Length: 95
Image 1 (spheres, helix red, strand yellow):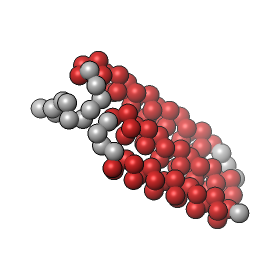
Image 2 (cartoon, helix red, strand yellow):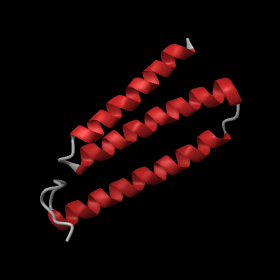
Image 3 (tube, one colour):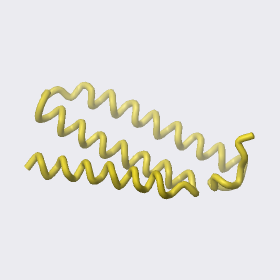
Image 4 (cartoon, rainbow, N blue to C red):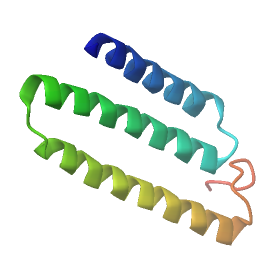
């Protein structure tokens, strides 16, 4: 039973990475794929911590950091839309 969940989590992780690599035109899609990767890592930590270590404290720390990462990504998206008008990567220069 645990093996089925582990295979599902690994599949979720690779699909999230595939979307992250292939969809590099919009910042919002990149941020959503990063959140999907974080969600798959959360499920992996949930499986690992509940079946092997039986301690959930590190899961709460991981959730705090993932929420901070999501808030930082959204703030970057909002500031980019305010300054450039869209979320295309090709519309602005890094110089």
